[in-house]
Length: 458
Image 1: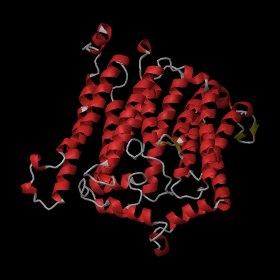
Image 2: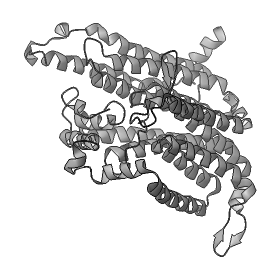
Image 3: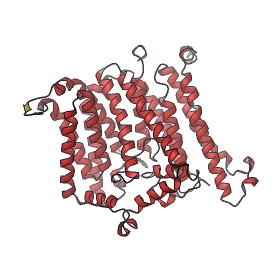
Image 4: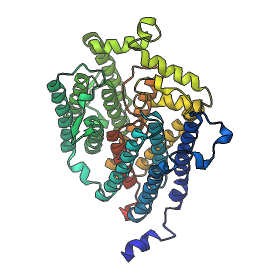
């Protein structure tokens, strides 16, 4: 015990930058909750001059937010013991994003913000559980090389979970449900999305496989005219796992997850081989597959038509209603927003999940969205920086793959909210309401923290 305490209080190696940066999400969540309480009292007919701190109802409801702050600082102390020299920005960045996620869930919940902000409490619980998983990931990956030894096991486990959800969807005979809730797996009242785990499993598989075969893939195979054919022996397992994953999610009508998996594959194979030809091959197959899928699958044609004809009266009042309301919300926010708690994001269907970015844009404005995007870019930058400085090829590819997940998810969901592509339902990391996404995101942060640990402390 004395050794643990001495390591934590070692002033030379203490994580001071992380400690000071954690003040930002702490102040943000407290001010945000006080603002929601202030707005709640104002909506009850009181003039601003009549409102005092003592008159704010439910001031004790700041307890859960204080619990989040305590959880962040407790995680900081544990990391100071486990990995004192690891990256000191990841926890504050994810803490800020998680604080915004809890705040928006509280704002957008069905009983908002009083008497009980149900969604906010639930999101808070998921964040705390995610922090526990983050610490557990750091602890159990002290030797991260063992992940690469079971590359096929990771890929098989993720695909099996998705197959189970496919069989479940066929069993409940609700396959055409637009919400796809039947594609989730439930255990004791807890809902789990297998797709969240699959993306992590596939990144580990791709990183392990590419680290072993990148030289052969980089050299290329036979040449037919100006085209280099990838060596079949090395590329076949990659393509097989990719096709199985894509076909499963196309069958499940989860286009967003299919696009995410494809994006991860393209980014990682390019990083591993530095061959633009593989990217061009992949994009060519993607274009051809998209044309075939568009002509064969009616629901894909419907998705495209909804976006292309969103403002036509026949669509705007029915299938495109969510898109139109989301764009109206973004427009209503203007440059600086309506103010937290003073917009009307409830008009957007599924605003707490698919369109949380629209809610942020309406109440925090375009500047708020730019700030959110800047924080996400900082997280992605730190992830790639950690990957570049990692010790082995596997660790470099793993760090790059994890960072690519954050980048691709952000691009896809924001593009869907802005009507640049069909809405896919991909969660915005740490912001979108939902437990599976939050937990997997924190596991990925735990892996990045472990990868950033210097070799002498690994």
